[in-house]
Image 1 (cartoon, helix red, strand yellow):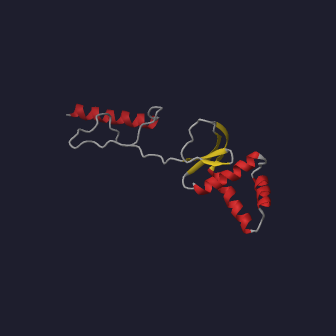
Image 2 (image 1 turned 90 degrees about the vertical axis):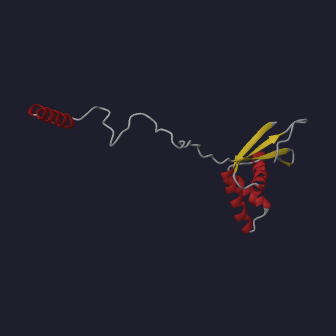
Image 3 (image 1 turned 120 degrees about the vertical axis):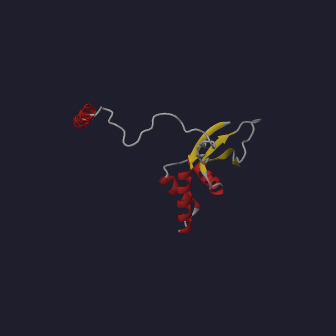
Length: 150
């Protein structure tokens, strides 16, 4: 298999939309080809591949990611869903939906995970502020004064 080019779905969808608008205006196929060539900055073989890819994309619109254009040598296996137009194969490639991550649920009666439990806001990574240090000293002094009084 020899890759020739590829076209992404968003570009093919824009091309099909523009082509439909030009057809509605009553343009001829030559005018449509020229207009889309100027719009998408393509000419020659690349424009021909683009038009063929737009036809394949219209047939496979749901979850389409891109269309790959290949030339397959004799004896090579043709991929599934490949469409032969002229001497090239147009292979639609689809997007896969992302799978949700699998989370383990704790078993019934299982003990909770051990570790530090943080109640409230986390302390500053730079240490305690001077106000917090003064409050901590005052609380310690007050606590030690209560112990001596007893």
